[in-house]
Amino acid sequence: MTRILRLAVLSAGAVLVLFPFLFMLSTSLKPQSEVFSAGLSLIPSHWAIVENYGKAFTRIPMARILLNGVVVCASIVAFQIVFALPAAYALAKLRFRGRELYAAARITGLLNTLAVLVVPFTLSVFAIFLFRQFIKAIPDDLILAARSDGLSEAAIVWRIILPNAWPAASAFAIFSVVAHWNDLYWPLIAISKTQLATPPLGLLFFRAAEAGDDYGALMAATVVITMPLILFFLFAQRLFIEGMTMTGLKG
Image (cartoon, rainbow, N blue to C red; front, side):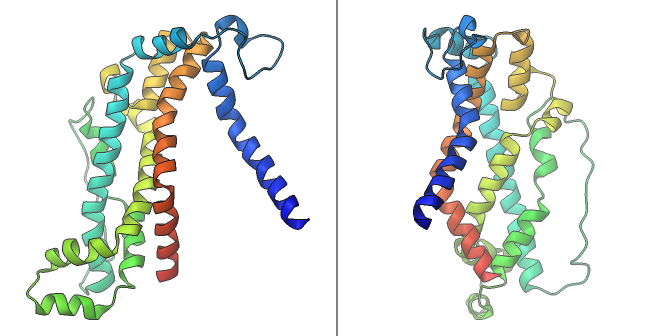
């Protein structure tokens, strides 16, 4: 009985969480006349798939905007891991003066470029300390053996530490991609060209182009922008759970 009750509660919670997405998907399939109809039906009486999704891909450069999102998120994750892993290794295994200090640099002259969306986020304190927690559990004997074999500290980081810290890197990559794919405020400040827009900013440009009243097409654009993130999370959820579990156990 307890198991049935638990499943019922979880199912109700899942329906509650998924309903906004289902409603968005349903609206993206309806003609404008049905969007504001009195009844609430998830299945359209008349389908407007071609019309709504056609507008989503023609009113703004949707393919370019999705590509911008992929390039920006992938670049941020790559640079964050490249910078955070050596820093985490140094904090976890090396002793030196000033290791608690961090420096920041001012970014100038990069407005309206994809670089301005990447550079400010290349250093991640969260990534450093996530990796630090993981690396501290790596036996010192493994590192000493690598040094005895003549490996430099940089070689130890990339040939010894990274393969062992891959679950943590996978978990962090999911955090980073979700955060920066959905980021709106910084692109809104730094980008004014539609061709350089990331997915959330592209959605704003689309809404402006549509005067904000074609909700079927607006929901179609939202589905297109949301779907890659959902597919990415579904594909990577096993790595995410494994990485967070192993990081927690080794802390």
